[in-house]
Length: 506
Image (cartoon, rainbow, N blue to C red; front, side, top):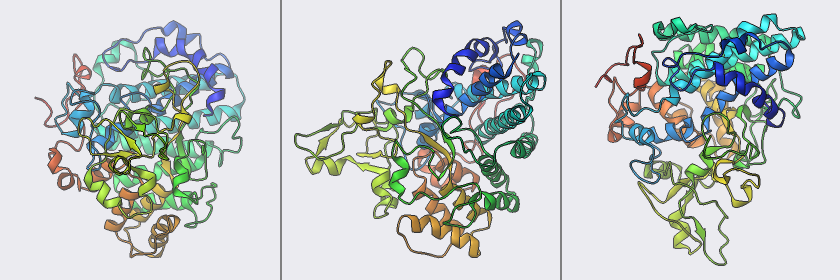
């Protein structure tokens, strides 16, 4: 959703959802403010404000210290948690070394997505009675269902055993909620997306006012991904075939691979032809330390987190003028070795050791420092906000939750890694960076995903869903039968009927 047009809406709905929404511990805080809720949604403007509030949770991918990208990178075999020390973010370090417990798992990874679900449930209940244009009502409903599906899918991928809540719950019911089977939640995710698709615009054409809102292509891509995680490969491939179109060409939804891979990471290159679901950021939200990460900030926090600490160019240096960051997600040697010699290396990894050896720049090595940093999200000083608020918290680079190269490779995987179409999809991703054709296979696709999507938060999920996590992550402490999912935060268990995930009771 275009940020310059939703800032006022966020302010308008802020009071409503401060009163209504569940906190990070959604099962342990009694809902308040129901009288305000009953008096809201009186017109289209208020319904739009409610929709904006539902959209806002999608920023969990890259907003705040507890963002999905840095967290998921830390748990993978490609990155360390790193940062300023072993206690610099207990949750991210506990995930990196697989000591994560019900006490150290950051509650926001559960609570924020349930907050989005709660907001969606309220809006879906209220929309039918709102006096507004019917076509817009259909679209608002479709967007809300698709977002609810997105949030449930994230919870399924991380916690798996979760409650399925489809309407606002009364205070008296709060502590009696129980978990549903993963199969039941997946079925609801499918249903929400299937019902949403017809009500969404085929393509977002009004990029001035509506860039960032969901389209049919975005919902179909998400549905294809959901099917893939469920092992419903034929259904998955069918959805992706529509999204992807002819490999290397422009699909019916207007998607096309960006010609230059490095251009994907240009801050100015928002809403390009490869973006399917794009997380929108701005440097105009005036984010500050007193409300960073609580939903009011709209900057990209990954940017400041992944840059090298103490970065400083030497006199006369031609090195990029990067911002000095916090040194999280340092690149492990294994990923460096996989990407070395690949055309995507220079756009993905900053080799600080090489810069220092060349006398171009220095940095202050810190905890789990390898000298290699995730370049995709590293901002230049010229990208720094000139507005109010903390400059470290106000970077405007957008993030791809799903992009076309990702869906090409997922379709090729859903096709079993064999056949002419899988080969064409696989080849198109490689050809974009100047690499020739090699025989397609599931192993080749997995390796290509590792190279193409490095640092974007996909690797850990790919390892878990393909059954490769135990072998790939054994050296980090991963235990099969336990660490494929996260422990449920302790505060969600207190005085509730929620049951802890297997092997996390201690």
